[in-house]
Image (cartoon, rainbow, N blue to C red; front, side, top):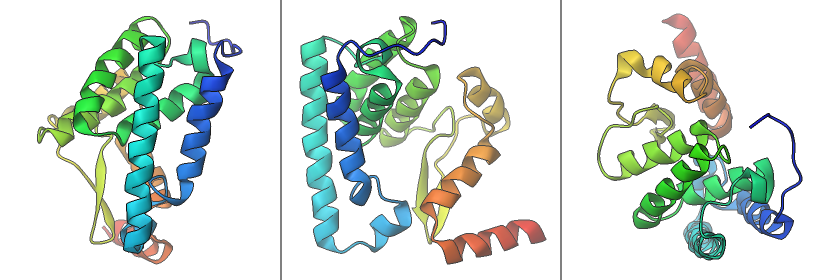
Length: 192
């Protein structure tokens, strides 16, 4: 890849993927603290949206006979496909991980995108993650899921184009931790 911006060859698929992710802003794409506090009806809507979006991604992958990469759907469409894949069920994720790896080999997706889905597959199967991309909200605070090599984490992250762990954690906390709880986390870190 030369880094040039190209017009997607399948803009209709890009619009579908991006539209699905944008529509999910109130359900499965909402900040974690809002999802945790959501009434059951909203949680049910999120599960239904995830299922619908997963089925749509599976149809797209079958039609394209591969991952909807940057050439076909552009940067935003490829990132939207990843967002859907990250929330799909485990069996679908494993299949998509292989397709995404092939897209990375072709230069049609990023290694950082692959690393996110790779880590999600590891965590869901009960194994420690490699790149430290997976967190959970526990008692109002973000907690990184177990990592195979905590001391080498930033080196692993750099190898796939991810920022240092601390930088990513700050961004995730801004998005996923409620404002009042984030202030207390910041105070606790400052005092340490």
